[in-house]
Amino acid sequence: MNIFSEQYAQQMDQNDPLKKYRSQFKLDDPNLIYLDGNSLGALPTETPDKINDVIHNEWGNQLIRSWNQGWYTRSQEISAKIAKLIGAQPDEVIITDSTSVNLFKLAYGALKLQNEKTEIVSDELNFPSDIYLLQGLIEMFGNKHKLNLAKSTDGISVSMAELKNQINKNTALVTLSHVVFKSAFMYDMQKVTQLAHGHNALTLWDLSHAVGAVPLELNQWNADLAIGCTYKYLNGGPGSLAFLYVRKDLQEKLQQPIWGWFGEHNPFEFGLQYRPAEGIRKFLAGTPPMLSLSAIEPAVDILLNAKMKNIRTKSVEQINYFIDLFEQELAPLGYKLGTPKNAKKRGSHISLKHPEAYRICKALIDPNIESKVIIPDFREPDNIRFGITPLYTTYTEIYEAVKQLKNIIVKTYYLKFSDQKDDVT
Ligand SMILES: *Cc1c(COP(=O)(O)O)cnc(C)c1O
Image (cartoon, rainbow, N blue to C red; front, side, top):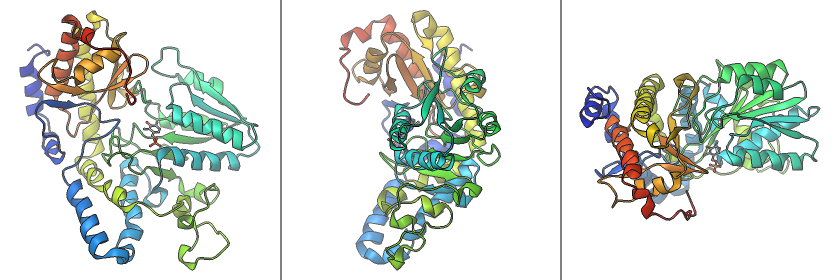
């Protein structure tokens, strides 16, 4: 059977062992194909009820008593579930603040601990916020550090050889996104960590596009520090709290720059001299937002139930399918693959490049072009990014997306749109 046919895609969907999970997300618009999982994951159907209960019962009825009826420990309970998802111990992970703030806190701790070293390594494919935070830290530490960005020759990946060039005995910290936000290139965390440790450098991994998307074994891979986002593949809702991971033996050694009362040894003693808490709680600063925190749990439960191994199997298969369709139907129309073809080197999204990427995205989203609205992400300068979320992405949706990508060029629909950019792309 021709793989570029609705029947083929439907047959793949029928045989999909994860198909039952889609109904656990509120994706009930039959004309919408949502392929933006890695900027804002879809809403789990359980979340509104959960939040309603927190609002009406825990806040409305129980009021302040709720702090002793579950609120104070809720962060640790959900953190323990995220720990399971990333191959860490429950007392090595804590949900708090935003990804950006957590990167600041952990990178500060690492630079302070490695006080005598003066180089930081990241790469030029990293998320700009991560780079800005490092630049800010360098300024805070009195401009004694040099930031070395590993280069990418193809705009998609960074080689181990290039990292070897950048990491040396003067490297204090190596901080990278495990899965790169544009291209989906995925580092071998274990190998890079080994390389860094060979030069006594610490590693800090940004798991924003990896957690819930690929299996992670932070303990086994000997990772030192990590941070990650919960509104992408963890479906925690817009601007939901992030998490951080500090390997057990580093928790005592690492200093936290934000000395807030939630990270204090005993906040309710209200003493006037800060003493850091023991363990992972030290990395907290202030009161957790309970509404937002409670929304993180439903999708984490679904992921644990479905198992990352199964999710990965389907993700690899779906992206392979997307790439096969791309080669057959889209490559002849000026599209280029912006993602590694080798499944071992990529996460769970796929980028296509096209000189008209912005207008193509506009046409995909416009309800008047084809029968379905397709929501991808546009990423400067020429990337159309599709998040593949095996819990709810279907093969039929991938087929439909490729069909529209083809028609938008063949039938020149993209010419109907201006290339003036919106505020948020
Ligand atoms: C999404 C993302 C962030 C987001 O940071 P916020 O503080 O939540 O805005 C940071 N780093 C990477 C790599 C991301 O993909």
